[in-house]
Amino acid sequence: EEISAATDFRWRTRRARPAAGERAMQAAARFREAIAILEHARDRAASSGCDLDLAERAATAVRDTVLRECIAAGLYANPSLLGDGSPIRVSSGVDAALMDEEDPPTALVASAPATPPFSPCAAEFAREGGELVDPVLSGVKALLIDLDGTMYSPSGPIPGADEFYGYLLRQRLPYVFLSNTGAKGAHGVQAKLAKNGFLLQAAPVPTDNIYTAAQAQCAYMADHIPHHARVFVIAGGVEGEDAWWMELLTAAAERVATWELRTRLTEEEAKEWAAIAGAAIAAAPGEGRPKVFVVLFTDGSISSSVDPKTNERGYADWSFDVIKKASILLSHGAEFVCTAEDAFNPTSDGFPLPGPGMFSAMFRKLMYPLGSERHRVCGKGGGAAEGGKYMVGHAIEMLRRQGFDGELHEVLIVGDRFDTDIRAGVAAGLRTCLVESGCHRMELQPYYPADRATYVAASVAELLPQQWLPRSFVFRTALAPARTPPRRCSDSLRSWALSRGNIVYASSAHAPSTSLIERLRHYFDAMDPGCTGTMPAADSYLA
Image 1 (cartoon, rainbow, N blue to C red):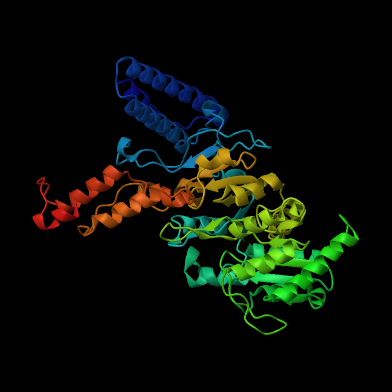
Image 2 (spheres, rainbow, N blue to C red):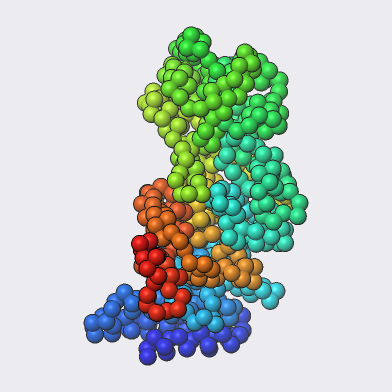
């Protein structure tokens, strides 16, 4: 009864349209009253021996319902009411089993922010021009957006990504798709988006709105690798307009022409280059510029790029031989330059593929301790002089060329990794949003204490105002009925077990949101459409 009394608040707030000056006070008062009733109900449940977990879920459902109706009525929700020291979570709804079917969940804020270096009123909704303004995007004037794991996955576009892209275009918000790929530049990303039909494009995404770690690394090399240097490149991707040497030539053709670029070395050549690298370091310890560089342009796998000097095919895959040649150079003073340190790449089946960060860590271990300062990362998550300047700094300039004239804290960077996207945003003084549609989930925040997300959401769709959400989005957590009885229960259960055991790819564990018992119930219900409590004997062995 007490929980039902709290639920009545939603009907009152649904009709509420108080004056602008009174909205914050009324929302706060109603919300405090609702919380007090819920706490009392929870205490009563505990003292009477009720199921505390059920009582907690019911209390949370009612609290969220009240808050959502305050939001829908245009009322402010003060973040101090919910302060628990965690980032703001933007969510599409609560437990569907505790909600009325005719009253589907809408956008809500479920917890308050940790103290960021700035104080955006991020947990507040307001009415401007008769439309609800999203709590995250209301204070944002420009966006930097990751792609893989944020806008799309190996299985295709992430639900809501098309609507999110449409929102950016409709609102004329300056934006840059900022990818940590080391195997392609803007034209390669543009072609990938068009080829796979991502973002429902009427026209290709302009290259002025795309920037990659491969491009940032080319710019860094053009500024920092001296004339007549020797450069050993380990590259992935494909040859053509987006090949690494074409990007380099575009960035600094005159200087590049003096380099000795190689994609394949004999052991004798590697030792000769190592001697040159060591001599340069010995001639001016701590001051001399390296003369030899090992450069990694890849997303993990490598391809047999043609050697510019010998015209031979380069290394087609990671092998002991290529690692040995790179180690000979790096152990004698060569500088290591890589695009990114993403540890792995996601796949459609949930089994991660090795990423550039795995190989970068291997070489970093080799160079420790005396060569640690010669390890450069030019993509998101790299140091201020590398990734901070050449990746994020350049992306900010791209936003300004699109008309952005605000402050850095008015830029939101959205991505799925703490150690790249969130780290880059924190270092640059931007707002940050972790989306759980890719690699990392909020539970991993304690492992990245310096890379604190301002916001966390399940996907980019939950950053949108309610009217922009796809109709099916609010029901996505419901278990869809099977059109035909499944023939192999073992495949579904194997997938469920593997996803729960995946310790690195959060999206894999996040996707199958139903519990094991729900999956089993769904299977047996499909096998028993007549609800007789029996199943065909021929199918019993599958169970």
